[in-house]
Image (cartoon, rainbow, N blue to C red; front, side):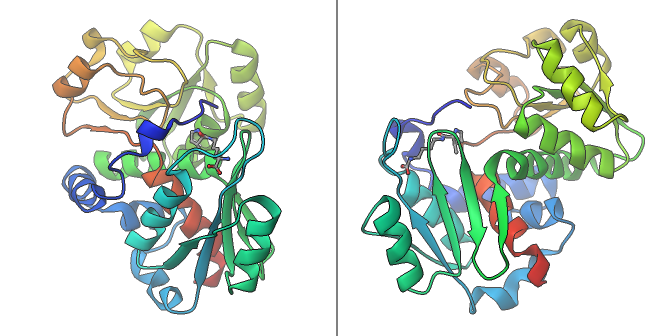
Length: 274
Ligand code: PYL
């Protein structure tokens, strides 16, 4: 998993309203609608929970340490969805104690290896990787007007790609997965036998118009594949499509650093309550 940088956080909170409108234009749904769709709910299903729940975000200093702005950005995304959220003043265990003492029913925290949401009363845990994959696959499904029987390609067979593949299969899509490490592709195929493992990226990209780019590689998808009906949802960090290509596919390309993932985590950890 690529570690986010402080500069990745710059402006995310301030731009949420504009990003939400961009998502609305591309998919017909905003952040809440995409996240709700990723857990098979409607955004209005979560409205009654907004006044009942408080969300705590705890900075974690282990490993490479705290990313300045990370917890605050997570809190802003949750707040944008209408929930009350706070970042604890203390970090690590002290922060966890502070969150619980201040009435948080749901807690978000991340070390270098895992970013998760915990619903204390429900005993539910949601991992950012799987939730992000499902959220981006939901965005792709909405962008495509449904996926039943349609060929889709997932680049990257890690936790995000696996979460996306799982959602795409549930939507009735014809799912192919490619990873530069064929062992990871084979492992995913054993988990989801309905997935087709592909080992030639060029041929796979030439045959698909609906793509999830979930690799940690930059510039994965070259300009020649960006045909007029190509749609790409790209959770991968760094983004797998260079700036020039992003301009070419504008309006049919979704990427962010935390927004869809955090929104999908929240709705996934709350989905049993609605
Ligand atoms: C969750 C992000 C998405 C992509 N990479 C993941 C990452 O950067 N993980 C590390 C997060 C560290 C957070 C730090 C803090 O500020 O609490 N422990």
